[in-house]
Length: 210
Image (cartoon, rainbow, N blue to C red; front, side):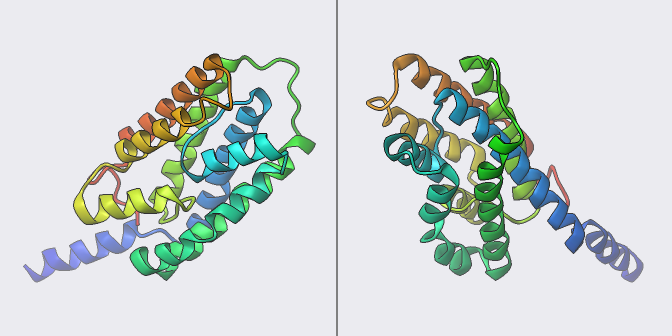
């Protein structure tokens, strides 16, 4: 029995992420998400969570998405620290800062000659969904609603992807007065795509890394 218990402890230690793995995941995940956001801004798409609110502010005021997104997330860090721990809060702060910075950086390196609305919704949604899964699996999020859904999943077993999808669709629907119906439909498609990726790939028992 002692030998079996010892092997279990070693196995648990083996799947814990190292610091450099967390750093790489945060950089890669936020690059994916910010690139999806860049595609969305190019065609005027919306999304949910605090990013959706940042998009609305960006379209209505012309302020840079990255700056607005970073500011909106500030009140949620206290909740993240109180409910999810200091380590999670620090990682989330870094992830939000990286997405904000990369969002400002992309236009200097990428330009689009043609970008279809619905293609951007699906591809951008895939990039954002994969980026979120990378962040979640390394103990980080992008603040806001993400913190709340992860807390509810960890505490009560509710699926973060499904919760996030419901909230995102509501936020996008509330944006009807800002965008045309076609853009709204594509935005909903993008939100569903991103959250399906999260729901299928981020659930208890499917990933051992910590």
